Image 1 (cartoon, one colour):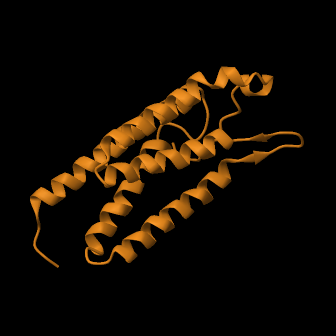
Image 2 (cartoon, one colour):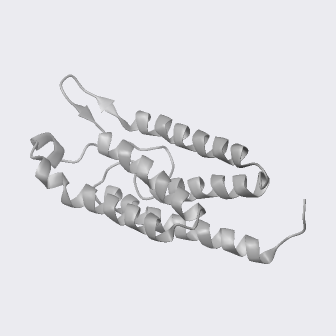
Length: 155
C-alpha cells in the first residue's frame, strides 16, 4: 500500500458528496409524497454505488476485470433491492417506478464515480421529472393516491 494521498482522498470525498447530493432530489420527491423508500435511501444508494466503484478502482488499480466484477455485482445487488420494492396484488403490480428509480439512482452514483457529472445530473433530474410530471398522465385512480408508508424501523 502506498502512503496517504490528500489529493486522491479529497477527490473521492468530493465525488461521494456529489453522488449524495444528486440522489437527494429523487429521495425528496418520494418522501414528499409519503412513499417509501424516501429521503434517506436514495442519496445513500447513490453514494454507496459511487463508493463501491471508487474503492474498486483504488483496490484493483491494475485489474480492469476485477473492477468490472465489482460493477457487475453492484448492478445485480440493486436489482435484488428493486425486486423487494415491487408488490404484486390480485390485479395490479405496484412499485415498478420505485424499483426503477432505485436502479437509476445507483446509475447516478456510478456516473459520478467515473467523473461523468453531467450524466449523473441529467439522470437525477430526469428521474425526478419522470416521477413528478409523468405520474398524473398515467390516468389510473390507484396511482393517484400514495400507498401507506412502510416504516423501516429506524427512529
